[in-house]
Image (cartoon, rainbow, N blue to C red; front, side, top):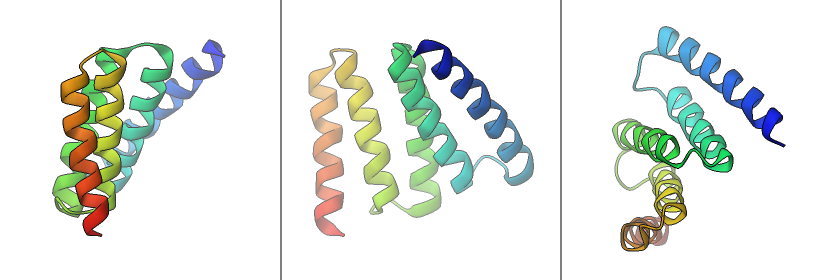
Length: 106
């Protein structure tokens, strides 16, 4: 339901504002909220916003957890899904493969 997604996006944006104010940009709460917001945008069909938001979450995951973490692998899957929805299948597959390699190494 689009109205519920709009409401969820508003709440996630408010949470993101608060987390950034309290914790700064490089914090797990910011990363997790960006990931959720990106998923909401993807469900709404706001594909460019979804990809931008998912990439931000990925950057934070790398900073906070290191390149070989489940958080990075999950963020890569989200970026891949956003690429896939936009029809960028080669880029999508690269990210899915990178995530797969990380998951196998854990």
